[in-house]
Image (cartoon, rainbow, N blue to C red; front, side, top):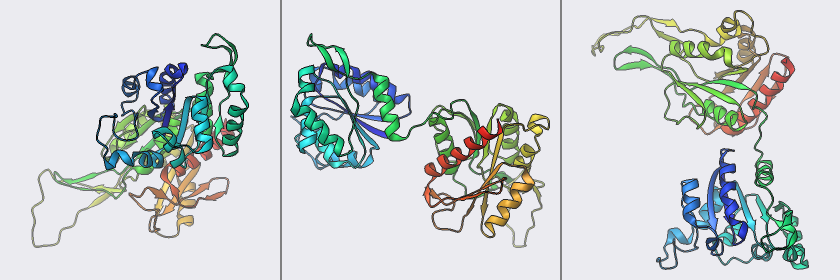
Length: 408
């Protein structure tokens, strides 16, 4: 998820650097926007080094001497559209007043007006400024518009006075950000093994059998699980995707390689999700040399590949005892989806099958969305509307966690 962190001109601006690090621990992508006043307390270079991203300091260009250009002139719109949250910490009395009254005289205030994303503000100021009726009225206006306010702490202030106005603790601000974004840590005690992508079976040194899987669904599951605190083992066939940061990535190519990798790590997992689209057949005798083109028909004899889900269901990785481990399979179908999914659920010994009709628009391979039904072995069927694959991943993980808690 992407957030913009607005830093305004107060003594507590230095604490925003610590907040960046804390938000990064939640795997949030942070871009910092600084007001001119903030740069009197801390340099943009500090935030650039922490985030690895450009720090936005001016409305037009990187500095006052730069010539305005079209890209910089509309950058606030681009940032406004791509962020999932705007958080301002510290938020001075001045910025609260500008937000409340719709003033747009710099990048941060313009961004506030341009974005549809949720907004969190963490005020920090002198106690008299905090208690002033104008400030309190501005806060009420912002709350009425849905802005989330993280109340300041009480204590000794930089000005020498004592009272409310000290920036809330970094953990308090981070908790509010996570709450607004829906970031959860409900899988932090789970180890989830996920398979993703296709497998490839060689015909000869230059040709192979595979399928149209992009790996997007499996990688979305890995990302979602990792963000929710799980230790994730991702066994993936060949894809063009980059493994999510922090995931234990095991690249494989063939179905046999995937089987070996899965069975080698299965005992570690509390939840296994078989989202890979493995090749069901492979050539019996792959050729050592390239098959030359001829004019006659050619027949290639195929044999079934290992059925990894079936082996897991039978508990081979656990010496016949699957125990409380949750096993979830996928079924990509083109007809009789429910019938096929129910049959697979019974035959493979799984706890749940995630099935979809890949002929549906928005549900096939290499799309960013999916339309699935969850088939459970207690007879339930949970049909989901068309959602992003990340949203589908979270719904699958919600159900997996429910099953896990039931089995404990």
